[in-house]
Amino acid sequence: MPPIEVSFHPEAAEEVETARQWYAERSPPAAEAFLVELDLAVERVREAPHRWPRYGIGARRYILPRFPFSMIYRVQAELIEVVAVAHHRRKPGYWKSR
Image 1: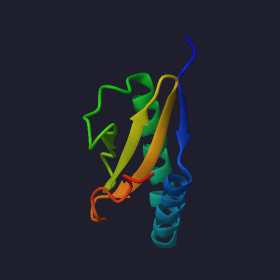
Image 2: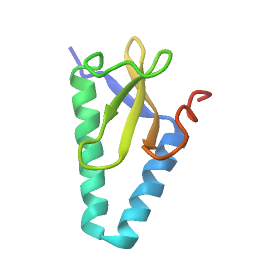
Image 3: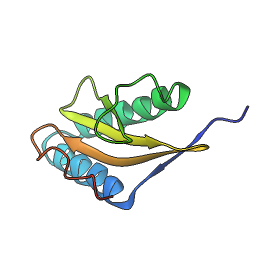
């Protein structure tokens, strides 16, 4: 069976880039580590999308272990849509309208 496709909502992709830039300004190795951690999150979710806990209606959450971010995603038949890469101090649920 082919691996399930993962797509990022445009606003989630913006959040990734904003976080990467923030880390890059302070520490390029931290920026790289953030992207590696996010890639690992995508692979783990792709392998077992229902393993991670429900978070709101129709969504699930994967907490990045080394960074204060969660990857919020929805599982559809043949697609995982990442709707937010949310900083833990940002207003909860801001992404629900996506």
